[in-house]
Image: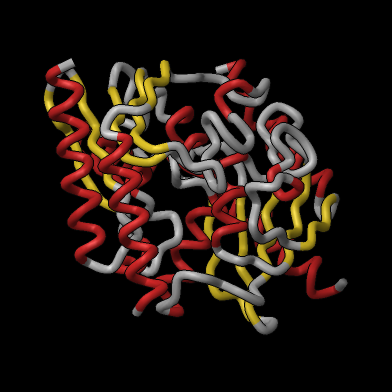
Length: 151
Length: 151
């Protein structure tokens, strides 16, 4: 649990860095055998790439580092409930455990929306743990969108 | 229709090239204002990247070329029904029209599976046209998987 908290803290740090860059503040960390293999914040604007969500970024980085397509045994920590695109990517990458912070009723696809991991066309589902770092993750997002509306 | 056929032929060519490289044979072409902006085959193996489906590859390439995150007004031609990850990416990119060849009951997410474009968490849906180049697209996939089983 102590480790899980420190990994989610690292993901929250990535989310804060994303906010500072003007990106929607979501951060992710990918862990294998107790070590961080990749960490990233959302960078869709910086990269002009709608697929550059934090989850996709860490999966790609980890795969590049390890030289393998699939990340069996890896755990993913992300501050926000993954969207439909990311949930499917998490499944394809064979991620073992998914820890996410805040729920996303509008765009999430794990416990909201299409609930991808419970569908017959999902061929691998991670174990899911939600709520870790939830308040901080949600506050970051609320603050970000409030400042956008006011600017 | 003539144009649509020639764009799907280009996507089929990309699928054949993918097969020749040992990749699952799926190809895609992205068209804006009547011109091909990007074309790619599936390259998950070559890139060690489970997100490198043909659709994601052309969306990334087109966004990089145009220097913009979203591709409003663009049409995507792909030989196989997009999966859950790609359907969501197509929505995020604001693709106008999606033309796909063969249906994919096991992994598709447009007319099968989560039918993402019809869900409340889908905030932009393209117009969908299916069946163009269907037989060739399906034959390519069947041939590929048969040769894998026999090798």
